[in-house]
Image (tube, rainbow, N blue to C red):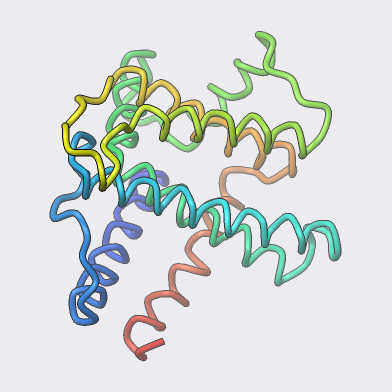
Length: 213
């Protein structure tokens, strides 16, 4: 099975587990996945996921600066970032959009979508996407993610619903997804390492759900 699809399916399962936990705790959330990007509840979920991603990225950056990448704590923080990167893709429907890009590029059905993401980012780098260091990549990621959430105008206190420009939202969301892969590539992490790192923490998170963490 395609590695990216495996990661998305596993993350969807974890998300369903967390939805049940949140329900038991009385926490409200949007009722569908992917969320309705025009609803107040859906947009609130998207913004919260963006916030969680940047919290984890902040913790990764601190550990990376202090300990380097070849460190268990640093890698765990990076894996947490991968989890919210996948959750963002699922919640927003960007995973489906990337799949459409995959088929639009005429990739064989035997091709691996994770490899495809790496190739897309490599192509973007050769066509002018440049960053001198990790900090510049983080800035580009932040701007793409912020540009995406900035398309969402239905804050909880707004009384009139504004329809989201879906094309613009997905354009910036897709660039955020690619930006994260750009960071991973800059860290010299290959697709299989990326895949393995995700599943190590996914197993731990599954245990946490079961054990009441």
